Image (tube, rainbow, N blue to C red; front, side, top):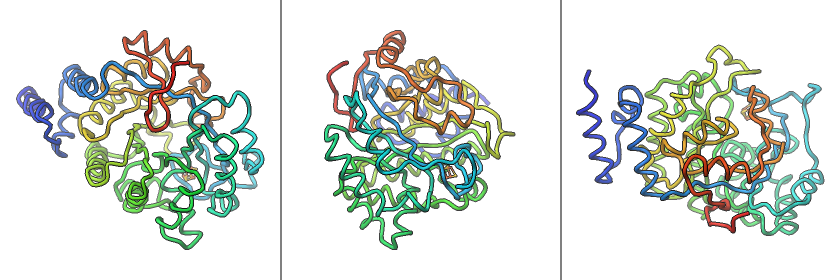
Length: 362
Ligand code: SF4
């Protein structure tokens, strides 16, 4: 099949601001010429964000790995009785967040579905304390799956739970837990976690309460291309309704230490194509991230040429989720290295905060 006419038709839609449909997305994934796809995504990225490439000063805490949800792709979760299980105390969390130098802009916290930690009762005083001790730090806390877990345990609605968290000081929800928002896939890889509808509903309610959020897609395991595209289309539709997503983060599946090892690593071409297709399908989300912790700095640099405008940020050595899934990327990179990588790729390094306000360069 000759892809050129279809690609031209899609380019015209993109140039005229018409949203792409599911068939367009499948075509872009499976047949669109690779370089032309990257070029088109780069044009859209440049129209939205100019020559900027964003990074953030961030501290990252995985506060517990105790979790019984049993997601098949997860290398991080542990049973409480396993030697490698851990649970930070509230005091540890506050101490780590406030440790000097505390001149960072975003605190990012994700944990497991831990019956003893993942509750509104546990977190509200911790958030209040964080807000009091490091008021300049914006708090990116919990995935929608964690919110679903906490609200169900507290027997409250998402709105009631999110209101309490927002009023305590939460700035934004993290984008994780989305995996692939298709029932067939979730049944295979995360049957005990929030459903696709519940994940979307948590974000819908958060947006209604003025809480901005991120969204992700964990790709490269059991899903089909059509299911990836369905996932992107659902995100686009929710964004059209609420406008509350700041950034989309494609997350490549890492295969070590989990039940889906047979699917192996994603390839660089798939990663770049995913970034580009995301940029084109999610025309109503401002930012697409090439997450260097997942891709490594070198592929993240290329991602900036395929539609991404953000590479995430400086983190200390606490990001355990990818490390335990086999990532060999150094998890700690100073700002100078991120800026160097962005400049070398031909972009203007731009320090941002969680809500994409531009900060003074470091
Ligand atoms: S992905 Fe999250 S919810 Fe699923 S098993 Fe791992 S820690 Fe638990």
